[in-house]
Structures are given as C-alpha cells and as structure tokens.
Image (cartoon, rainbow, N blue to C red; front, side):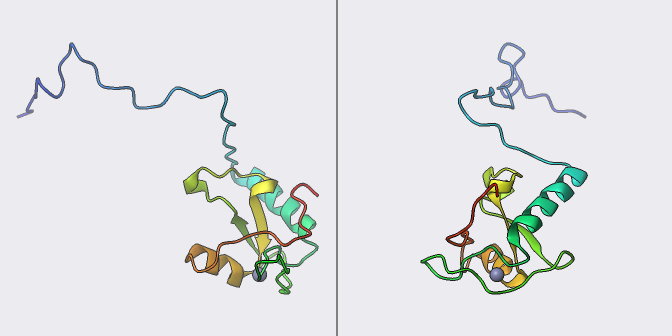
Length: 119
Ligand SMILES: [Zn+2]
C-alpha cells in the first residue's frame, strides 16, 4: 500500500523547485559532448607543444615530461564536479604523473609560468 504523508506532501504546499533560477550574472558553465571534447583535446595538445603544461614548482617551472597524443591527460584546473567548464582556459594537457597527483590531491595542477590559456 502506498503511504501518503499529508504533512510532507500537502497539495497546498507544493514541493520546492528542484532547480535554481538561472543567474544571468554568472557565467554559464560549458559542458561539451564527446566530439566537442575531442576538439578541445586537440586544441590543448596543439597548445602544449607536446610537453606537459603543468608546473612542478611554486615559481611555475614547467614539468619536463613530453606527452603524446595517445597518452596525454586532459586535466581540468577546476574540476567539472566543482563547476569547472570544458574550455581551453580550464584544461591542461598534462602527463599522467601530474594528473594523478592532482586527482589524489597531493599537488594541485597549476599552469607553468609561460602558459597562455588561449594560445
Ligand atoms: Zn607533468
């Protein structure tokens, strides 16, 4: 039998809206589909010059690891889960080691000092 709880689901008091109103002053997050993601991957790879774009020290010294098309990781600076967009300024072409360190929270990704987001 269905239990109807008149207090929790009173017809006079509709459930609160599930989604928030869109906030026009906030920039819309960008979410790409598979083929758009491939384009983003290509752009990031081209930008990288086939080297990991992460920095290994606080002063922005670039990670020396060379990357290749099949093996490199497209790492989000602000993760999707935290509201980061799928756009060139929010991704780094990174080596596996840098991405793993970021994923496991040992060392956050940050771009090397000569990095230009939309180069
Ligand atoms: Zn690296």
